Length: 601
Image (cartoon, rainbow, N blue to C red; front, side, top):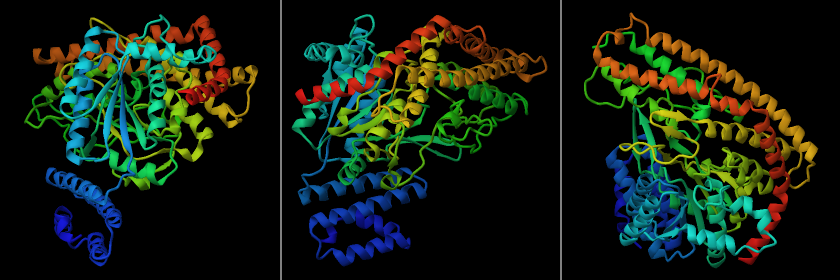
């Protein structure tokens, strides 16, 4: 095999001649080419791909370099084909979806485009696990499966009839234990069962496939994600399809004894607005600070580089998760490229305020930071349930406490995996792009967010967040004492939950007081008769949006909000604590029943 075969690789080496890493690689190729077997050349080419990725990000990630990087991957795939490598992993991409046809289409389109750009050659299929309530959504999801199938991407729909049949086939002796994990919702319906139940039921559906094909990996993601990363530079942010996910995942699962691998997300935060209100109000205040430093007709001041959001910067209680809280406010980055004024910047910013309640954070989006994937591999403690991959063995690891429909299910699962499989649970720098709402059309279904006209009610999501935090940190403390391998008593669980509850109550109360002070300050500033935005009719629409936003914030986070009332309600609390105790105590038996069931499928 001559070096002439590697036309794209040769162009890459020539383009970066003089870089010592490239020159070293060139020498290694020249020395080895005449004697290497195709399989050995694959390893050398993979080394070249790692270097090409590093240089791509170092040099600024321009469009021409992106095209060359993708071309290098395609040439690598040709080499793998010639080498006759039949040991690569195949992938089934699993997408649970509930009434989100527009977001699902964007997700599938990004996957299809990724496969065209990188040409991963070992096989990628899709399974849509449909949890939709609306018949129109289910019909559109099925139509999308057919459309992409016609384009060459095999897409299967795990519909609600198939879900019912799978549940009905469960052995009668195990069904009482497993119904909370995989059964219908509280109303007996098979739609909107919740993301944890839907994922667990899908895990059972996949068990037979794993037994028939041990090289098959299952890649779970959410329908509001795409196969891209958010690259931020000089105050600008753009989405780039620059990561060959399947290539990297194949290498990880081929070289390491991983059962469950998790990535993260970039773009919109993976948390609820229930835990972002304080820092977002801080950023809104900072926006007004900058805005009033000049006249309304002066140029927009929001085009500096700004600070990138660190991990967890969007979370009001980041220190709970071992992360460093953000030191100060984050300044808004204006996306406009035309010449415009402060007045126009205020109008643009105000028009996006309402999207916060669907989970967007205009000032603290997370950007991609390159780190070589294999170097980034490390023990994990949190599963990002919108971005995780499991082997056949990993199918044994269901989402715990699914019937409670709590938020923080992934972090809670992660705390259990850390003690149950140790090094078999890892994370890697393979984030997906997360977008809470479609760019043009506004929000689709999001559990826990109720909209009536323009009023937003987050009470359900807020409550599930609070008790999800309680479950997470309660389980974390119990695992430190040997749970679930070592049994725990009801009294021990009760005492642990009570201790964590007291701490969380204090944190949530302090955050609520802070939010109330911020709201009062923002109202005074907006209504200041000397502020330039009180001068004319142009700003009236923007002011109306700000007032509407603050009213919704008060309704959801103020002292008299339904959300706070739910948390403080003694009878509701007693019911939650009882259900949580029962779920924690039942988990070891559920694990045994799940393992026994997988042996029968």
